[in-house]
Image (cartoon, rainbow, N blue to C red; front, side, top):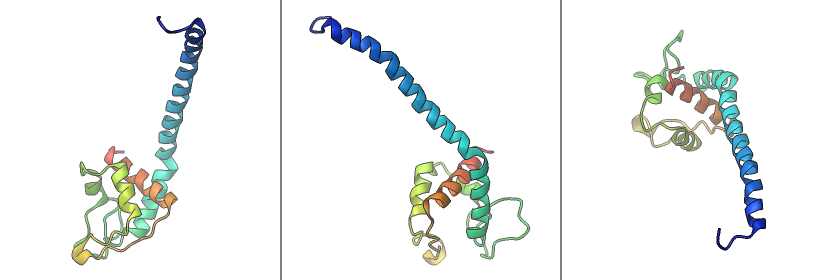
Amino acid sequence: MAGQSRTDTKFAEVCKPVLAAAMLLVSLAFSTRAEAVSGDQIAAGRKFAERVCGACHVVTQQRDELPVLAPPGPSFAVLAQRPALTEQSLREFLGSNHRNLGPAEAMPNPRLVDYQINEIVAYFMSLKAGK
């Protein structure tokens, strides 16, 4: 190892396991986050979407009533299967004002806050995954 001192080599040997442990902790944190999304947040997203979006969209297939809008907007199940729908694109869309969509560009702006966006994204991603 030309140009490296013994101290540099020792330091590198000590750092490798520490770096590996740090990377493991980061990956565990992300997997825990994904697991945390799976239960209550999905249910909250479905419930919120039924209240806010259900007047125009079929949010779930198990509904007692149809949307007021006739014909309704695309169902959430159909939207979730669109290849262009990603978690990031959905977050951007939900954070926007929605005004350029729908018949006569009439989709309302629900003015969602971060936790509502997180819940709706969790619900959509569960639909996309077929859960």
